Length: 260
Image 1 (cartoon, helix red, strand yellow):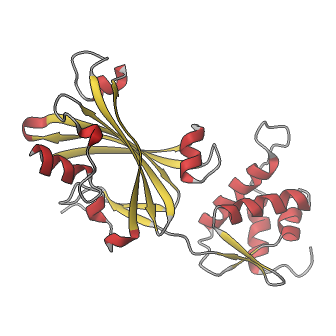
Image 2 (image 1 turned 60 degrees about the horizontal axis):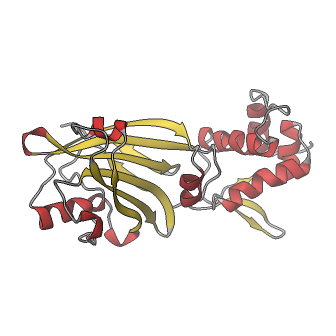
Image 3 (image 1 turned 90 degrees about the vertical axis):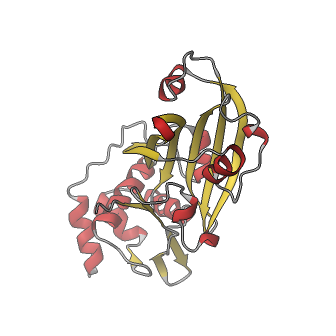
């Protein structure tokens, strides 16, 4: 490949350190897509930077142009790249979300500014029975106690960024499964309708790959894509557990932790 650009030279240097596995059960184009994701992150490519073309990618990684084209199309499908006829492929601006792990407001809704950027879609709101894991997290006496299960999809500027699963004891919040959320906030609903304020929350976060097809579909990403999984519990007065939470967060979300 003659007359390589600076980005293409960097890509070829990166490709020499990457080993694709043609015999893997993971399609080759998707392995290439994941490798290019890492290249984009490591080289801090900016909005409107020109992305290497199919020929350059195919040459650097030793794959066919159709494979390179399919990998690029995956970025286009995810809204990360934009193709211009006769112009090439460019980095596209992505909606981002910054979350503060420690702040005075424990509600996600109150963290987003301006608030109009965030929209919440209720996917599930029902009474069900606690699994052993949920019962343990909520410190219930028996694993089959009735609980309220709430699944919400968070969108920023129309882009899905997070699925939030909340589990709450039904005996503490009767009829919650039928209540519309106050201002789209679970915590505002608990405070206004049940006189219950969240006083403390603990959270842990880990990097994982999404395995569940429904979660991948709601987030608009392929199965096995990298995600953040945020787990934790919320407490009211006297350290009484009132919520167990699991959130699935797609790439593009950053976390900030401020200690004073």
